[in-house]
Image 1 (tube, rainbow, N blue to C red):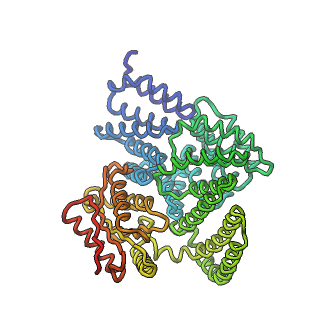
Image 2 (cartoon, rainbow, N blue to C red):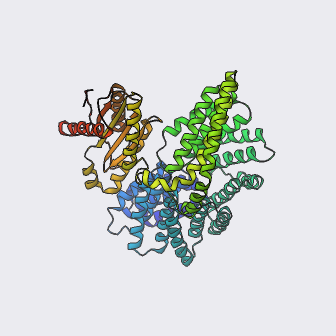
Image 3 (cartoon, one colour):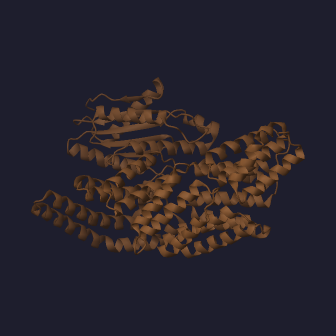
Length: 613
C-alpha cells in the first residue's frame, strides 16, 4: 500500500471518526489498515490517530486496549509544540478506560488534568465533558451533593453550546445520579432525553445505551413487563458490531426481568442467561461478570438446581476476591443470602446458619461503614427520633425472643428442626437489632469510624481495647495487640503527594480488614499507624497472623503507577496469664516492639516474651 499524503491521512482520520458513531468495530478495522503508515506521518496526525482509536476501543468496551492507545497518544503529544485539545481528549479517554477497570481515583486525577487543559484553552465543550466525567466519579463515591452541582454546571454549558452528543452524555449521567438518589421517575425523564439527543446526533450505539438505562430503571421500579418490552427492542437492535459487554448486559437483565415478573418465565430466563454467558468471557468489567454469575445462581435456584447454583456462586467468590473498588455494592450480601438459602435447601443446616449469621453481620457493618450522604442527612433527625422511640420496645421484644429461643432449644428433639427454628429466631433478633442500629448509625459513625479509610478510628480502638482486655482478664483468655507502621510513608507523601499517600492508607486498611476474623478489629490509630485487636489469640498464633499480614501487603499489586510496593513493621504484644495489669500497658509494649523494629530494620514483625509486668 502506498503511503498516504498528509492531507489524505487527515481525510482518512475524519472518515474513521465519523464511522465510529455508527460502527466502532468498522472504524477500528479502518484504523488498523493504515497503522503501518503511522510512523511516516507528522506527530499531529499520529496523536490524532491514537485519540480516535482510544475512543473507538471504548465504544467496543475494550478498556485495556483503550488505556494503552491513549497512553501512546499522550506520550507523543508531549513532543508537540502546541498539543491543543488532544491532551484533554486523550486524558478523558484514558480516565474512562481505567475507571471501567476499577481505578476510580486514578480516573479522577486524569479527568481533572484534562479539565485543567480544557480551561486553559477556554474550550467550552471539553470543559463540559470534564465536568461530566468528574460528576460521574463523585456520585460513584456517594458524594451526591457535589456531583449534582458539577453535573448542573456541565448541563448549563451543554445547553449553551447546543451539541446533541454532549447533551446526550450529560442527561445520561444525571439520570444515573437521580436513580442513585431513589428518584426513579426523574431518572427516567433524563434517560429519555438522552436517547433523543443521541439519536439526533447520529450516535446509534449511545442511543441504545440510553434505552438500556430506561429498561434497567423500569426493572428497579419492578415494572418488569415494561422493562421486558424495552429489552426486546434492544435485542432486535443487536448488530455484529455491538460490543460483547452490551450484549451480555441486555441478555442478563432480560433474564432477570423474566425471572422476577409476576408470572415468572423461568425457562426463558435460563435461556437468556446462557446467551449472556456466551458473550461474558470477552467482558473486561469486573462487576458485569460478577453480577452475571449471581443472576445465574438465582435462576438455577428457582429451577431447584441447587448444587449448580452453588457452583456459580463459587465462581463469583473468586471474582469477589479480586474486587479492587471500594465503591459500595451489595454483591457480597446477595451471595451470602442466596448461599444460605441453597445450603438450607440441600439440608446443610449448620452451614446455612453460619452463612446467614455472616450475612447479618456484614449487612449491619456495611450500613455502619457507609459515609453519610446528602439524602441521609435529610433523614437523620427523623430516623434518630424514631429509633429512640422504638428502642425500648425493641429491647423488650429481643428479651422475649431470647426466652422463646431458650425454650425452643429445650423442646426440640430433631437436630434439623432445631437449626431451622434457631435460624428463624436469629433472623428476627438480627432484624430488631438492625432497625435500632440503622436509626442511630449516622449519629455514631462519626465518632467510631476513620473518615479516610472507613476502618475503626483511634477513639473506638481504645474503647474496644479496654473492653477486650477486661474480657480476657475475667475469663483468663489470651488477647493480642498489633501496632503497625508503614515504611517510608513520609517519602510517599513528599514524592507523590497526599492523594497517593491517602490511597496507600486505604489499601493498607483493605488488606488488614481482609485478613482479620469477624471477632478481630483493625483500625487506624493516626497518621500511618494502624492497630489490630485480636481477642482470644495467643502469642504464637498472633505472630503467624502478623507475618501473613506483612507478606500480603508486601506482595500486593497496588492499583497505582506511583506505588510499586509497600512494606510495614508490626509490633506484637500478648496478654497471657495476667502478665499485664491493663490495656494501656499492653499497648505500650506493642508500641515499644514497633520502635525496636524501626530502629533495627524494616519490613519486620517482633513480639514480646511472656513475662509478668
